[in-house]
Length: 391
Ligand SMILES: *Cc1c(COP(=O)(O)O)cnc(C)c1O
Image (cartoon, rainbow, N blue to C red; front, side, top):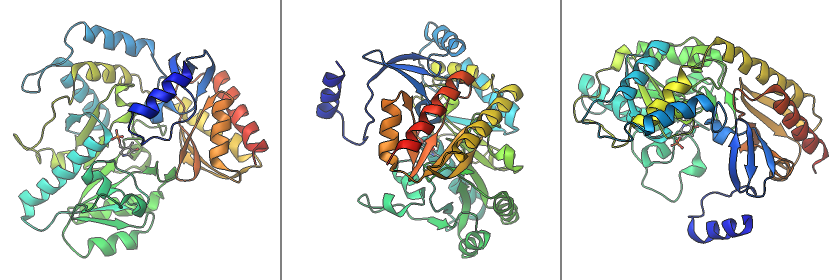
C-alpha cells in the first residue's frame, strides 16, 4: 500500500516537497503510525503545528462539537467562536484587535497591508518600505516571498514587490542605515529565525530595534507564525524579549492542526484596517476557531515550565553528542549543526522511528509541547545514536 500511495503522489501531486520516506496514517499525541503499522515518535509536530500532538482529546471534543453546530458561514455574519478566540488572544497578550486568516503567509500579508495603510493614512505617499532581516522566512505568496531575506528564494518569480529592504540580523547599525534612507513604514522580524536556521535574535538588538522603531513611528511587526503559541516557553516569543510589538502574526500551532492565521494589532494601529480594506472567505472559520480556543486556553505557566525543561534537556543531550557542532534555539524550537551528512541523518532517524526536520543546513526539532518524557527520552537517544554513527 505504501508503494501505491507514493506512486500516486508522484503522478498527481505537484512535486514541490521532497518528502521523507513515511506514509503516515494515524496517531495519538506524539506517536504516529504509518500504513504498515510502524510506530514513529514525532519531533516535528507537523512543523510546529501539533503542540498537543495529533488528535488531542480536548481539541477533538471542541472541534467535533462545533462541527455538529455550524461548519462555515460568511464573515458578513457574526459567529461566537471567532469573537471568543479574539477576546482570548487579546486578554492573554494585551493586543487590541485581531484579524483572522488561514495561514502564516496570509497573516503576514495582512500585517504588510496594514502597515502600509497606517503609514499612508498618516504620512501620505512614499512611506511604504518594510525592512526585514536576512535569513528570514515570512511565507510563499508574492509579498511574503519578497519579504523573505533569502537571495536564493528571490529567483524565477520576478518581478518581486517594491518596498522591501533587508538588514543584517543582530546588527542595529545595518537596520538604522536602511531606515535612515527614509520611506520606511515597518520593521518585520521573527525573534527566532526558524526556516533560516533556528537562530534566536540577540536581545540587545531586538530592544534597540524596538526602541528605534517607536522613536520613528515605524511599526514593529513580529512574525510569530512558528515561534508563537507556546513554542519558545512563552505564549509568544516577544514576551521573552520584553518588547511591545505593534503587530504580531501567528498561525501554525494556533489551530491545533486546523488552518487558521491571526494578525494581532496593538492600540497604536488597531484602526489601520477599516471597512472593506481587507477580508477572507475562510478566515476565522468556526471549526478552526473552536479548535484554536481549546489550544490557546491550555497554554499556561505549567506547560511553559515543561517546555523550558524539555528544551534544556534536548539541548544538553545534543551538546554532549560528538557529532554535533553547535546547538541553537529557544524552548522546544531547537536546531543542531551536525558534523555529519544531514540528509542521511534525517533519513536514518525516520527509518529508526523518529520524525525530525531540517532548517537551512541544521537538524531541527519541534516536538509536541506535551510529549511525554519517556517518549522524548527514547526519541532523543535514537537521534543521538544516529548522529554518532552517521558518516
Ligand atoms: C511557516 C512560516 C510562515 C508561513 O506560514 P504558512 O502557513 O506556511 O503560510 C511564515 N513565517 C514563519 C516565521 C514561518 O515559520
